Length: 506
Image (cartoon, rainbow, N blue to C red; front, side):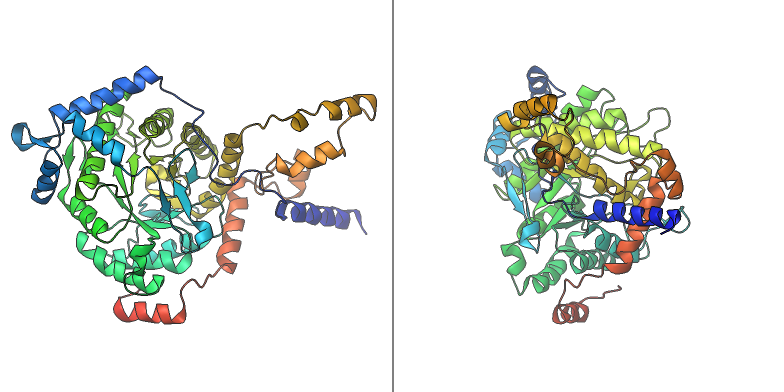
């Protein structure tokens, strides 16, 4: 064999070894978080007390009549300027009785996840209106075909634990078509837990009919809901949004779990000081919790307090900032202290290209949120351009990044065997190294994660293999998946029945 042929054969062998599934996954999803505590206990108490004072003094404005009646029945009182105020005792009673954990079902039960406690899962969120095109490397309007392709791609990525629609199909101007086809794209292309947003309350019940078809019959979806709603019922500062509140009522009526998302912006719709921001944002998310439990006590809700930062010089969203990292970590810490299922947002890179800025912003923000113990970390896969964009390559790279993060969360297991006293003695008195020892072999896959995309070759080998960068490597992987992964998660009968009842445009 020629030297060039030997090199190619060696490269193939190395690639095959890297692609082989490890005997033991060293970093599966659901690792325990909570070691990073950016706030002291007295600081948490101060923030919490301020949030309760805000609800007791200012309360909430623009309360729809139906909700006002339910809140008053739960203890809310009239306040100034037509507002409703929430006595401290009322809020604390709700916190104590609210759902602390719930199962976020996948249609494939092995893909279900338990939300709450100290387990950390990465997933998606977002409503990007632009997709980073893999051919041109530039952004274009997102389409329904893109959403379907993103659903197929993430279906193969182990570290995306649930899939929320990551982009808006801008080619569907009708809101009924948009909501129906978005959910269809999800259930057709994955059996993971899924989530979506409902543009208007009137679209909830018809979509539940579709979900019943998928689940096996009328009323079956509600018995084991595999779709969650993302709703923002609070508009900062401290008022309810009637349309979103209507969606909350419909979701509860149809047993759709929800993430009630607060997305205040520091210096714009909330104080610029980080502590003040946390106090207001906590009060607003507590107002969502009170609302949900006033309608139906104990209904599963992810306490989704998402601190958003703007660049105060320009007003631009700064999703990849250090301030975003620390605020979302603090939010996770506070929510976990309350004992509620926590949802935060991270990995919202401001970078447009898949470059050094992208990697730094995603790594810093996602690791901080995970270390702090965010149960569900939204926006963590695929998002770029300050949530305006989404990228196929980013999905692939973020999946690998999450493995590294889970490995960090797993920590260091200190046991007598792992301390290796006998192995050290054997090496020192024997070969003088640890290569090939049984102790090393035992640890090789159990304790280490080996990335598929990250390049760890020496410079000469990297050059011989074409000097690839991460963007191009991820693009090749994404294209390979999209060319080969065409799941059939709906039966022909289910698909035909859905298409008979709904205007499906895929």
